[in-house]
Picture 1 (tube, helix red, strand yellow):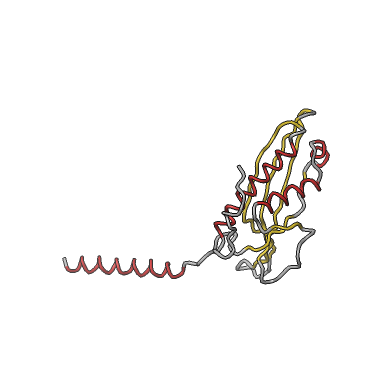
Picture 2 (spheres, one colour):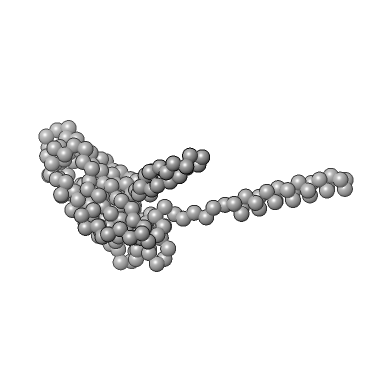
Length: 190
């Protein structure tokens, strides 16, 4: 009986020591958008520019809509044209809006509106020591919208507002208290 108890205790001690070693090896990680202070809005990627224009939106219109919607939500966003010089101690990511529009009938427009937050990083992945450029995605979302051609610009605006609201939610949750957006000051649009 003593030998069985001793073996059992020895096994428990070994399991405990192994679990403790694994706990000490655990890496501390931050949420995806932790510490991001700048979001550079790139020009929208438009898959069908002619059809998008037929539906009432130009590249300049889309950039203005996307920038206003994201800025009004309290995100630290600026357009690629207005970008301040890069600072090595400030975390910056790129926002890439995409729009794919089809026009199944003359007075109807259907679009996929998407927003992706990414950065390009240089990494070394063992065992190969050659640096690699990789894209890191922090947020990705999209919405399908459709309706009449005249109402299409407003539907795109509402879609970007919804995507921006999702991004703002994640951004706010991921920040330390000093960077978190003041949610009581940010308008909530439904």
